[in-house]
Length: 181
Image 1 (cartoon, rainbow, N blue to C red):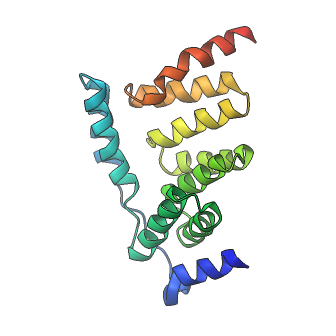
Image 2 (spheres, rainbow, N blue to C red; image 1 turned 90 degrees about the vertical axis):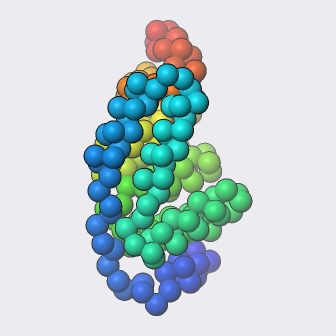
């Protein structure tokens, strides 16, 4: 009941509205990925990751932006129930917006609901194949499930896009686990 109340309050009177298409940042993301691949050091690579996040976090309209911002703020304050309610409202309102699924997956991950996170990560990547953070999240989620071979593949795919990810240090652990299988 609390989730429904929060979702209705967050959605406001425009609840019945339809979500416009998400901004198309494919070209800008491609340029940022190329720059990350050529970045001279970790600081430059991380700065480019921040620019990628700014693009992913640009919601289709003001209502979607409020839902996304609320989900992220509540997640950061460890209010996972309210964060999930906002993320679910966002996905319901904007079913073609990748970041809604990515944020819902992240909340599932933080709640240690790893199996529930995977379909949302897959949907994120269907909608936004260049979503480096979703690929990284997929690797971390698969690792948490003990599926290290798959985790290594997902992390390699993320590192192919941005070799400066902080999670790159996990790859040798995943590969060692993969060899032991």
